Amino acid sequence: MPRCCIVTAYRSSDYAEIAELTLPRLEKYAARHGHDLRVHRLEGTDLDRAWMKVPPILDALDGDFEFVVWLDIDALILRLDRDILDAAQPGADLMISWHGPDTARLDGSAFPPHYNAGVYLIRRSDWSRDFFARMLTLHGQVTHNWSDQAALHVMLGLNESLGFGPDLDNVADRAHVGHLDTAWNSIPGIAASDDPVIHHFAGLPHAIRMKLLRSNVATLGLYDSAPAPFRSELSRQLGLWAAAERQRANDAHWFTGEMQKFMDEAERLRAPRHMLLNFPGAVAKRLRDKARGS
Ligand SMILES: [Mn+2]
Image 1: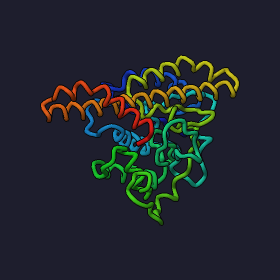
Image 2: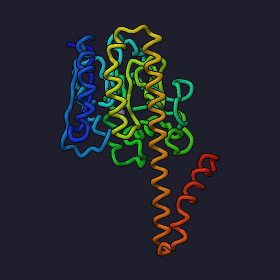
Image 3: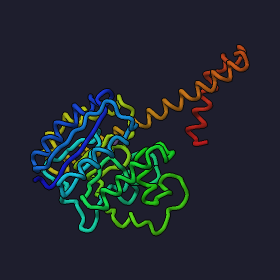
Image 4: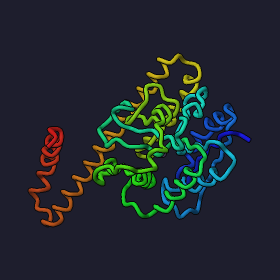
């Protein structure tokens, strides 16, 4: 029996394009290290977004494996030579990457430090089975746009990451958690490792994510053959590109919002002619204010 089962899941309707890019590399990786691989293609599930990962994880934890690895479908394996089991820590049941200034290179704007739920290295134990079963009961109970990742923080008493007040003391579950180096869950443009094994393309609009993923897949051969400084630089450049794309998307989003506000105002005042004539100047002023940070 293999010691480890790698699990991923996705909704074929919206993530098939991404899976097409990430799965071939994942299949190669699993075969290379002799790990089982379970790919769940879900159509009808009442679990929204990332929550759909929890039942497949529980299912694998019921198996005969020593370890279960969860990978988001938007995670691309870069290096085939590193076995994730080497990152397992004695005494820890759940290893997750903490993303903050002490553990990652931050290429984009600041964010509250937190655990990212895109990659889990799980030791099969009574605790881990119970932990994920309890997590599932929180579905729909936590109001936060991090969905299952928010539930993870609630369970660990890490309220600060969520903006829910101070962290709690004496949370027993926390003793079972170990840190997984960011190399295993490196998010280009947000929280990156200097020499990543896995790029997790989180927090990006779909079109941009596809563009970055395609480019990274096209350069995978270099991760197999190029010297370490070269592949490290390659990942760094991709991170800078991702950060710039994200900034551009945020600016476009901001501009659309300003435009909508103006249209609403114009509508409310029945669009006096002078307002429409002043529109370009008004937007330019708002942009200057934004640039000054006011
Ligand atoms: Mn993801």
